[in-house]
Image (spheres, rainbow, N blue to C red):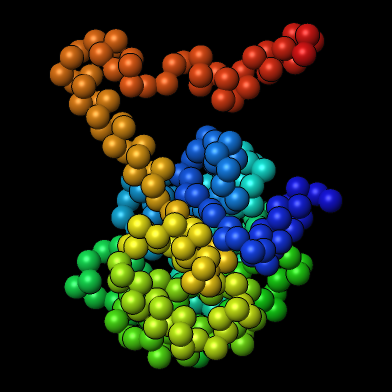
Length: 296
């Protein structure tokens, strides 16, 4: 079994398991590698992370499909975990969605997630007063169906992200969209909400006929007090901790730069940063030198 097939099988098995698969967001290859050391089940490559950390631009459909794919490949090569990639709204129209699935599958990734926000998208974490428009459900289902028909293998996972609750369209619209996307052949549904109490989510779970039949995914950034076990008990098969490592990295860098700018000496930050030797260890520097010298 090759590496891509093994990763996809691992993700598929997890989605069918009794506990929730927990994916952790990674914004670079080293974070992706570290995820495997801390018991996570998968790596999530978010559109927000690619835009923010790789290009320092807003997450408003400015990154391209190839830019996202290039970064996803780097993170995938650094880990033995399945890698799930946020592909925003598929980078364009129907043919763009089809090409997105074909390219990410061919590159060996385990799964992609595509949402129904109209181009240019507005990030779900922006305020409730942000203007949002969704692609008509029938058209989005048509795009998903065409993408799945172009898929080469049975094990690659397409997650459909339903933004009805974020856009204020209500539970009925969310259920209708989820049903349409499942009928189009998607492998899982991601339902998102700004309601920290999970009231909207629970209303969806109580109404959607696909619950228990199709894997359900959530990103609990906006309802962060619920554990993966809590969310599994409600019916979720995949929980994505999407951006916490990225946010931690930004805070640490800002604090380090602030201290250095004031103290003007390198030792001022030594107690709070990794040693150079630890960096060498994380990427296997000694092993690489031993191979080169013929002693390893």
